[in-house]
Length: 295
Image (cartoon, rainbow, N blue to C red; front, side, top):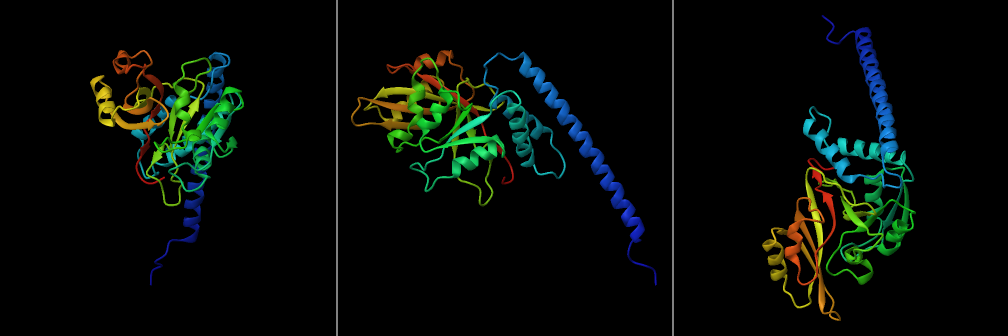
């Protein structure tokens, strides 16, 4: 009766050859990573002194490009995960890399911990985090240079005043802060992943990516209806995909946070059409999250 199983010697030799090929590929990948680090050092040397090295728009552009060319059975969700760790390592090469996190529960969350998990996922597992109980404390880290970015809870209309951090960004004074990213960057989420959502704020203005949303702040009369606010944005050529209207009975004005499609620059002429009577303020922009299978 003929042997129905492969010869153990042949199997061992085949496995050894495949492992040797994997070792060769690992070495080649490592060589490329070291070469990339050298290029990052040259880029840093050409950059402006004191400039924040974090470039969320550029990072999103890289992830979009890699996902567009991806083939084979390696899950797509792996590319952003690898990219995030690589971006964290090379950004840290260019200067201090500390992220401030506001991780207290807000009106839409049952417990804390989710924003710290988001920060770890997006900014690297080994990155130094400074955890705070309020957004104002995390934002103070940006102002005094203790952190290069702050992870803050996603705004909601019924937030307590201490959590309505985005209203402070409407002041166009020295030391201004900008929204530059939305977390998580990959969706949908796998079972067990934190359901938290957050925005990232830095002292540097956002740079565009292939698929952006812009967040615009606007003061309107306190009695203006949501429908009228929506019409204001539509008439200006900036239809709002999302609209947050924060009213305070003690004030005669209401604060609007609108999410519009595309990258809107601060000198965009459409902003002038939003005067009501206050000027509209671009609070920042973020790359639209990407996804496929659960992360």
